[in-house]
Length: 580
Image 1 (tube, rainbow, N blue to C red):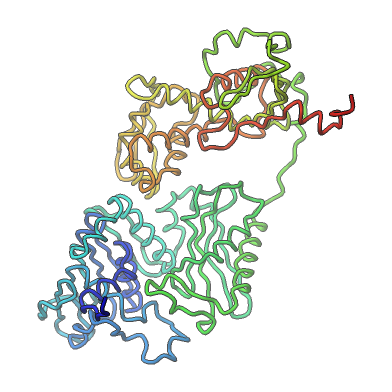
Image 2: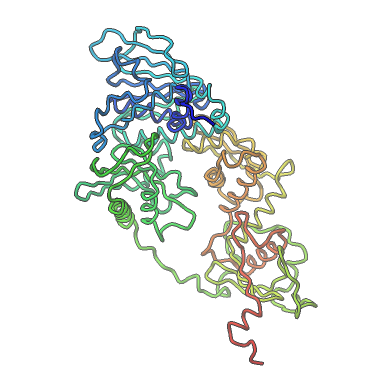
């Protein structure tokens, strides 16, 4: 096949794919242009998740009428003049590709006016082709409207996520920049509703409060660490405030938002041994590095950079975060209570949770009589692939594990994972039209942060199917009237917030998948925790309910609920095998 030079419009669309991945990519490029133009106020307007309209308005320096047609020409920029300038880039933009790439896959209009001009100018393009240039009355600054994004690239349009997901991406992006540039005023309006507004007074607490709620915002720890020409500042979450994923770990280097594995690793290393496995901190860290020590010309999207001394940067971030955490944390008091014998405990301990209400004949068995658990096949025990045999409870160790004897050996049971499985099975059997609800004596009104509010609004029908009765009660405010009866002794708002933390629209597009995910998350929150002492009665009930589950060997998330030590293994470990 002969080699041919691609047509200009085809090449432009291919190049645009590297810069414009989704609507949030467009918002990022336009915000960065506004920041480079020294704008003090930036307003972003979004419709249909950015597919129909993205408009960014600023009060920056503006673009002259002569330069306006060059804005959509590829490799036209005012940021650099020679290759030498790449070694000390001080602006966010410099490649001259962003506006040209956006214009090639949308209908774009740019209106701008510079200082000391009595009028502005407006240019319109379709698919990167200029259609019209007109003088226009406009305030000093720039307004860019991007309409019908990806109208001429149906393949890219087809693979966009749901609107709720695109809105979440844009919200997270604008939040990051509003935090990094707190001295600038940001306003984000989506689908006609103001979603995020900052005052531009440089106060980070107010911005954090809008995203995470003011109670959590007050808990964030300020980071301020300098070493020679390097510096790290920003905010990190305390140990008790964490997430199930690493999406809220944000890094800016010299004012540029980047995604870097080494920085993420340094942050996680600083939290090592302080956070439970599978939990991640919230962080917004802003690094100052001499421009000549980084290479920003790595990828057209400009979210990747290279450090000349990555080990030094890794160490800087790790030490800055670790010192902040250690300064904040106080030694936890150690209590030997967990080693108290269960005989010294009251017969009933209020643990805030309840086991199955009906466990049939198993509850009537004498758990202290080994004969009640004897099997005719004791010498040749059956193989249990998914279920488990009847077990004789021995006790609890470390306030975390149950010890039980079975016909085929010893069982160590993780009480948290086991209770997750029990609750999950009980909950799934109740969901649907027959779900038993517990109505509250008085409705509870509660406030959610921006992300939680968006997620709950989208998933309200699913929560209500699962036995909740929740309705909107104002901006980011909701009212709950009932919860599933299974969790009637638990705090309703904490149940809902725990479930919201786990939801990802993109990963669970099917309704039944999302229901199962929400149920699993709620059960994880409500299950007994490690370190919680259970009465003998509670241990018996938990063990009996676990035996009744269809898949008792794993929790709903796939983690094992128990470890089995066979009699043969015990004999081998004690050196008894072969000695007879």
